[in-house]
Length: 240
Image (cartoon, rainbow, N blue to C red; front, side, top):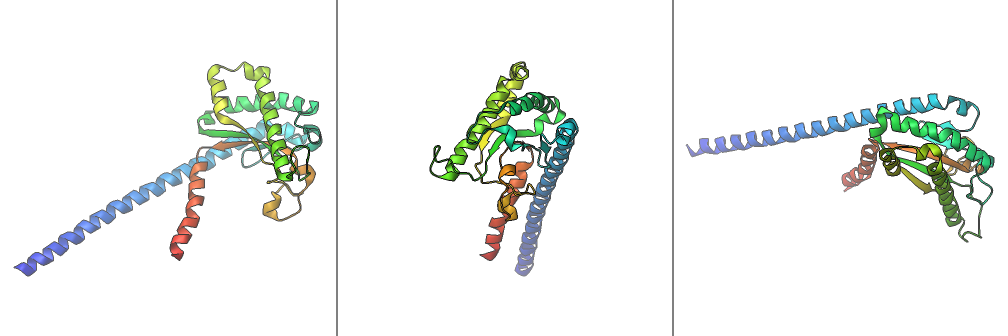
């Protein structure tokens, strides 16, 4: 009789463990499905917004004023028209380009159904490797300061546009939530093929490296970043 009780206890234990494992498996599958859904939405939203920007600025791309990247970047890369050497004052030609392009750019973002998917819009300043000892003896720091001031100059110009001032208070608050000014020095200098020189391991092209970019960060990027961050820890755990 006691032996039967033992077998019944083991059977109950195994049944309980199976139920626990089943709930764990269901929870894991649900988590994977949720992450996959977010990633799919991220890809679709990004492609839709990219297509709208490409369509809106088709003429500007043909004229070589800017390029729209698959990463939702809008790149101004005509180095000679952006800033004077060592200066963060916008040249008149660049001011004219921004005055024409930015209102259309902002209207797309504010009036699009995807506005709720936008998490950040970065105005990025990028420089070449030229030293500026009058700014700082360290070339990287000097260019970091210069690129930050250039990004800030673009931000200031944008906020002074009549079209910007005409936005509602709610739209202005949203734009202030979205926009940041970021100086990146020459850390992401470009090679002649417009690839990041550090990644391609090719010589940097000085003219291509000097640029201003508007970069949209959408919902779903944080999921990708989480996945990437998890990979090294998983590899480490396997080794241990």
